[in-house]
Length: 280
Ligand SMILES: Nc1nc2c(ncn2[C@@H]2O[C@H](COP(=O)(O)OP(=O)(O)OP(=O)(O)O)[C@@H](O)[C@H]2O)c(=O)[nH]1
Ligand SMILES: [Mg+2]
Image 1 (cartoon, helix red, strand yellow):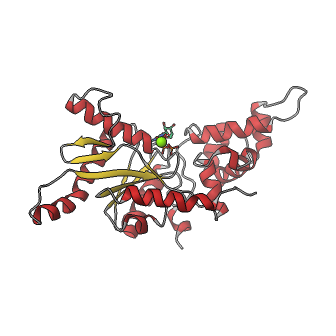
Image 2 (cartoon, helix red, strand yellow):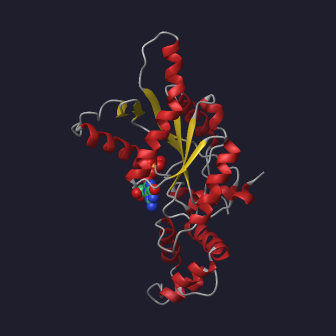
Image 3 (cartoon, protein in one colour):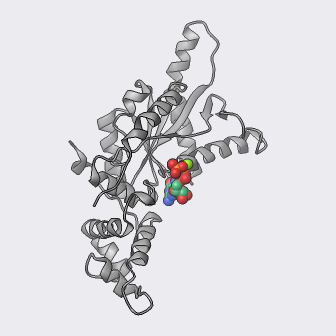
């Protein structure tokens, strides 16, 4: 199987991201907690010129809680960054993001004050691969601020910087990390969590690989949910009676079903990779 990508776009996207990053004091780096390593961009440190980063494992509500803890510990040790688990719908998690961003940005403002200049708000931005939850987090950060300050919706729509805390300003658009897909194993996991445009891959192939992986990692949950005993789409087609007119198996529908069930967390809380396998 091959997932297509376009190296020509990468340099341009990186340049844009680098430009945005140069404007901020703190970078909020969002990963998908179901594929923390595969949704991470190793080169972000180079692009941010080593600005403080808050590493967020988002969608932790639909990821495996045991794996969540493992990944939290792994990244905390490995990166030396502040790492937290979040769900974009949790107001408590949004407050935690604000609290850590304010802490991480304080040294930058202290420096300004030490030079005898007036302090300014800490500037932050949200960065991550497609579909990890960047917009959900940004919207929540803005809404929380509006609720607190009583600011009217729409007023801040046209401005680039939005005050989300007395000391914090947020860039209102996320930084999109360009996806390099040299590594097909990684590309297929990104496809599984819907982080790659559907035109780039064959849904049936990705669904087949997902079924295998879920069976390997979460056999009981997987088999229980679909009432199957084997990791094949054929089994799911049979169990769910997914047939085309005339009685032929409907692989398209089966693939769509499995992908959508997994992406929405319907089968259960699942994580597709564990830290020990990802160590180089
Ligand atoms: N369960 C769960 N779903 C989430 C969470 N955060 C975001 N989502 C869902 O994931 C999908 C993508 O979220 P977005 O906020 O649009 O992600 P994004 O990173 O802005 O995506 P792009 O704009 O495509 O790069 C949406 O359906 C969200 O509702 C989360 O913490 N938990
Ligand atoms: Mg978005």
